[in-house]
Length: 237
Ligand SMILES: [Mg+2]
Image (cartoon, rainbow, N blue to C red; front, top):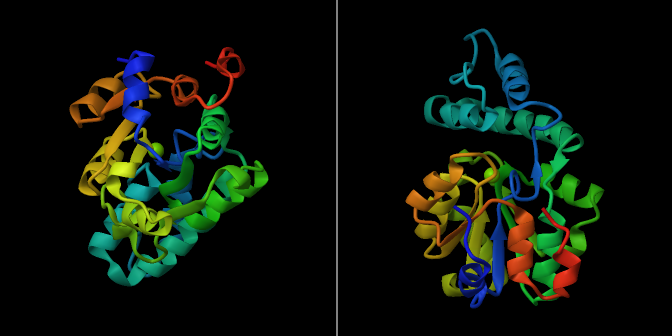
């Protein structure tokens, strides 16, 4: 389900600060170096005399990191650092999301401030932002706290950190993300969320999770955010 633009516009009207997920709305982090390959290399690099790390069978490296945090606290610093290095490599081959930059520009043009809030490593996000010249459109980046995987969404911890940096209240903010855990984290932080359903079937899951609105393209969200001439968004997907 995608929303009529008037519905989106009313969700966006009070928003001054946009907390934005990275993997999904901005780019597809593991488009060039697939997540299962990253997971396999992470497991390999963490295997030692005690065998492979907990969650070594996971195809999602962030899920593996969560399992390690639950079961092998001693391994967390090395696991987090190793994964951050692999994510740095992955972002160099990440696929930008169509309409993602247009959304950032629409936020800037409409006087809204964007804060990146992501379970990926801050160093990897910063590398992507630099490489793609997006620094002028993003006020700050809150990746998972290094060595503290429990900071990851659905925890609201990173959202609270972004709000503190912004000097904002939940009512001034919205979270935009493509996963149910993004919606859950937003609600735990007291704010509404817009779901980005980038795959078939995700819209229903995001709606069920309580997203205030769901879009199927970032271009649609850019158009609803406005701030510039509507013509500049007309050709967006
Ligand atoms: Mg995401």
